[in-house]
Image (tube, rainbow, N blue to C red; front, top):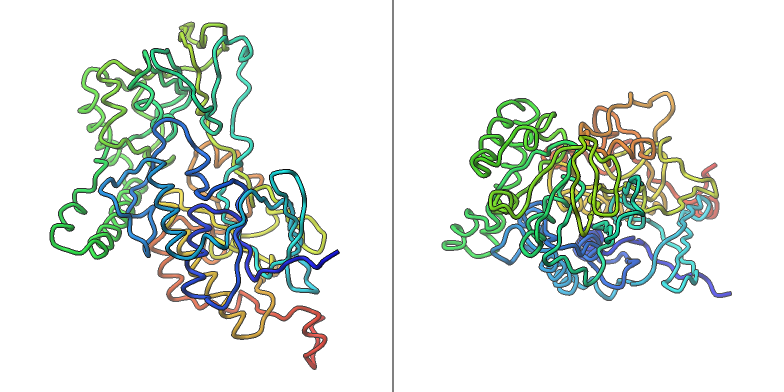
Length: 498
């Protein structure tokens, strides 16, 4: 049998995170080889997987786009197909495409300390397995389960006469024109689906257990439009990006310190947008703003659909599905031809890859986050876990730049292994992984690594603090250990590594 192929870095995932890492490797680590494996047949990650009506960004594209490739369109809130096209253009222009191996997924990875590298098991679309080795494993496949969303087993589901659809697996050609649609859920997906489907459906009802905080904003960035009259595109885009980061950060901090003030502002805007259709039961959440993710309503489209009578919101709990719709615990019945279960995501650590260290299964709960991307006492591995209160890409780029620095330090010092060392006696006190009460976060806590109250052992949710930390704290900070593999140390060092 031939020897497995080798790559210095194996990037798992061809979405925003994987493309960011590949582009930065081309800029910052030109002598380091890399390969991307993407389980789908084209790049895009989330933006290729989700194909439900109206799919769009839930962050402005000046921050969801890359800093090194400014978003080119006037629409700041972009549709899914526009985002896919943008990612394809970036991957092509930055030489990433030749490095992508499509239709391939990683099913297992075992780090071998003696060799200082990962042995990775791959599987193609036909189920054939192959192996390769990599010095560093970079997991950029997102944080949720691509195969199993959160989809509760509602009683009577099998009795419903029409289709029951989860947005993560939207069927091609689903015809909802003139149909009565009930969407179960009130998160970002539901908020997107309602106005998109209401354009042609007979009526769309959003069924929620509790209301969600929502904020309307224009789909076109007015500051960007103004600046482009006087500045080149790249300069204008850079200024808009910095401004939007500061505004998002200000709103989030204000929501945490003065939630009553932000709540009054959002409530006032919702009342104005909905007019007589506003009522507290359906539109006033029982928690503070940004305790869960604030939902974006571009151009107020959801509010328009409700005000025009094309959509409605019902706050109640499901008793059971029946042949013609959903019976609620209040006794009310919602008639439906189609039911959409926009009930949320299920988080998956490391893309459900079976990760082992010298054959021993890695238990993520036994380890702390280190600099929001590596893990205590785990060698040569990084994961991209985006911000919950800001654009995913901000973390993806920060992590990519940092890991490129780690790789360059390894090359400069002849190290094979980079590992954040944490002795049992030095273990920090565990803190909440996140201040967010969102269901998908709370459901995943038993699976996730630990997070401390302070850096560097914290999964941080403060982009500006992270920027300062990455600027001021060196790569070789006395915690991240750089070592030779045992075979190399034994052969070349007078003091072999034990």
